[in-house]
Image (cartoon, rainbow, N blue to C red; front, side):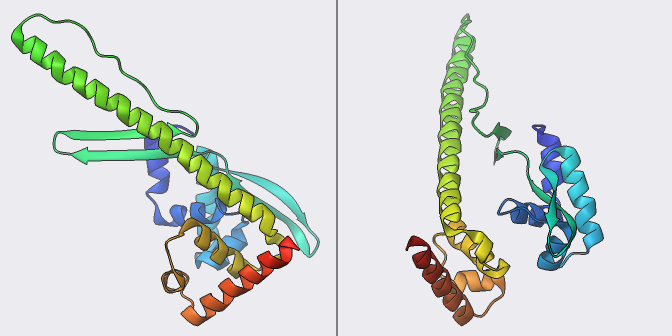
Length: 211
């Protein structure tokens, strides 16, 4: 799914953004999302079906020893959207992961003084656009590096032995490195003392994993 309008139509919905924030961390099944997000399972399923149709997520079945087979959802694409809004400028860019966008080459026609001035301005704008494209490419590379660091740490941590609250806290610790326990406690709705204790438990668990 690489159509700007379709993507924006999906992610403009707050419920769908909450669902995507959850499934990019780890695969979820509808009942789990309903409980964790406080949204009806009917609404969860409706939005998951839409996002799967649009290509943002993909579903798969997984057997469960403690109950019936579950349908999990995980991300199906990666992209970056940038929007610049200034006086005399509105530019929206969709950058698929690993791609750097389109380059525009300036034309070389010069005739009158006015046309030369116009061409000069267009040439400078073209240079700026190329710099923006290079910035987007570099940003995409940094995002991939960031994501790889998180994935490598999560693989080392063996999340299967952590409960959901500890996993959610670990995701926030990694994705918001400048936040402290107070910031995270406000986001999660937990007491700061509880968050600090859970952080200590995560650190202790990681130390045990290194042994």
